[in-house]
Structures are given as C-alpha cells and as structure tokens.
Image 1 (spheres, one colour):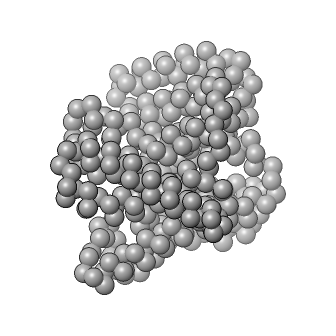
Image 2 (cartoon, one colour):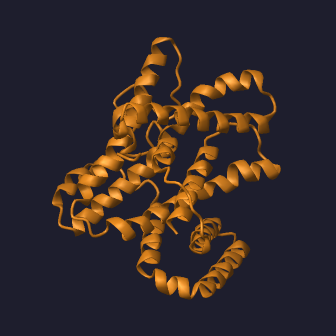
Length: 294
C-alpha cells in the first residue's frame, strides 16, 4: 500500500501546485480542472499525514525533535529564502508584496505565520502540521513543545485551517482501525457515497470535499502499485513551487496568450525547475532543505 500512498502524496502536491498557477479562466471545464479539483490536494495530504503518523511515528519518543528537523526548519528556510528575494527585488524597485508590508509583519506573519499564511503561502500546511505535532508531543509529556505553541496562542492563531487537524485525525483513525476498514470497505464506500449525495443536495461543499478526499484515500487501499520513493522531491515541490511560479509567470504571460497553455507551461516549468534544484541538493547533500528526505 505504501507505493499507492507515495503516488497519492505526489498527486496531492501536484494538485496544490495547480492552485497557485495564474490565469484568467473563470468558467467551464478548465476552471473546474484548474480551480476546483486542485482544492483536494491539501485535504488528501492531511489524511495521508495522519495515516503515516499513526503507522510509523506515533510511538517514537523523539517526535518533537524529529518534526523540528523535518517540518519546522524546512518551513523557516523556504520562507526566509522568499523574504530575501523580496528585499532584493525591492532594491530594484519591484514591489511583489500583496498581503504583507515592509515592516515587522514580514517576520511575524511572513516568516512565522502567526496570524495568516506565510510569505510562501502553500507552506501554511506545514506550519499547521508542525503545531499539531507539538500538541501531540504534549501528550507524550514533552513539555518543551509549549515554548513553540504559546506564542501562537497568545499572539496569533494556533491553526490557520482546522480542517487539516480534523482530516489528520481521520487518517490516524483509518490506520488504527485499518483491518476493520479494509474488511468492511464496501460499507464505508456506501456510507461516504450517501454522505456526498446528501451534502451535494444541501450544498455543503466543505463536507463534500472532506468525504470525497476520504473516499479517494480509502480507494488507495485496493491499489497494488509499486512506486519509487520520491518523498524528497514531493516535499521540495510543495515548499518551493509558489515562488517559482511567481518568478516565471511574468515572463510567460508576455509571450503566451492562451490561458490553458499558460497554466500548462507554469506547471511543467515548475516541475522541471524543482527537479533541477532537487538534483543540486542531492549532489551537495543539502538535505536540510527537505528535512532529511532524499
């Protein structure tokens, strides 16, 4: 099953990449493909994170130290890199900030994301995931995690998206009861299908998204897929796709007028550039940027 989860994780990150491509498509099939479908990236990734935590990390005593290495440090580095680039562009009179200002908020929110998504927006997921692990560490009696949690409680928001926590718990429960889930999967499929139909009628779109995400994850139980471990590349793509798109989009839009082609070229360029960066990191063993993932 791990092969199918690895493929599903890469697919989820690819969907997240599409949420940050830029275009003027606001209707039709391509709007659905570029705007609606990619919204499932974060929800599916939340379930995967909860499942893998319960499978491999829940009993480890050094959980907080591990997550500082694998989540916090890459999160801070990726946002610090963007902040440095922003100030370099400012020197040349290019103002690329649209949510933040050139003041302390670029540190409090841009780097640490106290109240809002950081300057590198997609990394809000990593921020919320790390704080969730800090809370889990408290239950493991690692009280040092309070030093990391308290600033967010006092000066900001503990979680930017509570659905990440909810779906993480769902993923953990699926791991905990995986034999029961697998043996009764048809019942779960039917229950989720009914929930989706009811919420479609009631237009509860968030519940539809959650239910479909859970269904997609459960379907991966049946997938017998051998897939290489590219966790380092997937993680790097998650961390840096947004600043790459921000840099290449102004160039592409000058010569590409077809909006579908523009999205495709943003995506393929980001995939290629991330691959090149990944190969450079592997060559010089700069695994700190991907939390030790190779």
